[in-house]
Image (cartoon, helix red, strand yellow):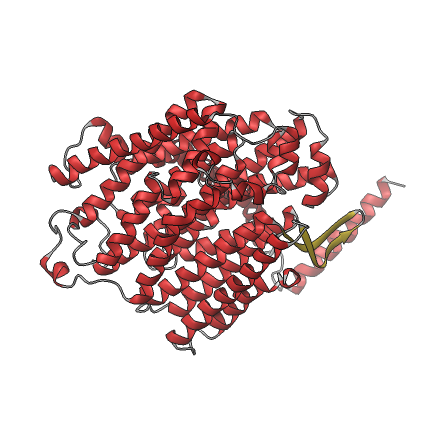
Length: 636
């Protein structure tokens, strides 16, 4: 079955072609069946590949498809790599992708661009599968660019709204900044190792001493690429604006799959980063800073999707923090659990928005648990999971990251725990404002409140179950587990473990204390949120109302967009205006137009000679002959 892995991306590509070409012919029911079935077939095949790989003695299998580029010594095959890392990513992309396709069939049913939406979703899945299956950096880069294109198309899906179109352009431009770093890294990798194939690069890299300049530069450039795609400082502001896209897009692209591409790429390249300590330290600091800043912004946001967007940025920061301290398994474990509970939370938010007739402001919600019981209980599950309470999925993955951070640097651990407290607070703030208290919307909205159809609630229930039990795939030994995920991923980390190892050296007593502190911190935050929004019935201030200094900073997102506008956009605009008005119009255009004007003016004078008078022509001919004779006489 592993040899049929090429069919995994082919099915979504076929779905894209059928729905894209037949968008004006096919019925909505047929479109949703084709789009969903394509992903289901990929998921079924991915499941077979996963179990076959588990049973196989060889855990890394190269599946060549065809020779792609062969110029001189440059030989790049188009081939797929099936190993533990890519097999799990296949399950995440196709499994979560299928649930979101099913959900979309209900959520987008009334939209005029229904078929186009499903075609774009299928195309995104195709490129995401290329990204995770590629056996070299160039195939990965094709998928990397492809998901960026699909992200642009889906964020700006409702492009008639100017703000949504601008959000799509912002995402596209900021991702290109990161992608340039990735592309330069690929060039440098080929220059350094003579190949872009993982199987040829990593064994060579393992022989290099730690801190080698070329490895440092390669990993910094790769990190720049990951920063753009996975929304880290300073390239994170595109992701909250990307909430302009339909909610299923937010769940699929901006929570479960595309934004984790940076974590996948660094985990895949783990030996390169292990031997570049400056880069890993930078990753840890940037990741933690992103986690804290995004969490602080989420504290005061009132748009339910914006809260989840900043939560995603914050959780991605935790994943980068894990990568920075060498906890590759922990970071990837959090990718898996985050895919479950964040996809659930976004789809749950979509269910709320659907019931509220596209209202997204939590100040106009409240008391919805009675009208939307399934949505409430599933979102409660996702909220508990992301808050890190046992035994839900987020507890195990976040605890593993924080334990490695504690072993690496206790100051970073303290800040990380504070970030976990903020997460628990703003997530339960969202839950309490949305589902508890009395309804604060209009009478018309209250009259039409209803639970979402089965096509939307069934994916919520499945994701809620995964959010509840998903953490058990990597239970630590201190809690009686066997670190199944760590064992399964060990072939991917073989060079890193040979160089530095990855296992925790903490004793069980310390691990218990760290878990206790983390859970207690979350419980305190939940209690504070309960007192504020349930007991005191606090409602966030309306737009235009006075806020204290810190709340105002948070509500306005620390004015980061305004800062970028002032120090980057406006100066670039000014330089552009200078080049347009001075260099282009006065200089280049002036020279070109001046030559044309000069020829035109000269011709005005010369055309007077062409009078049509024959006598004048004879006179000029005689004068010319006399002039030639005189010239000849003086030059004999």
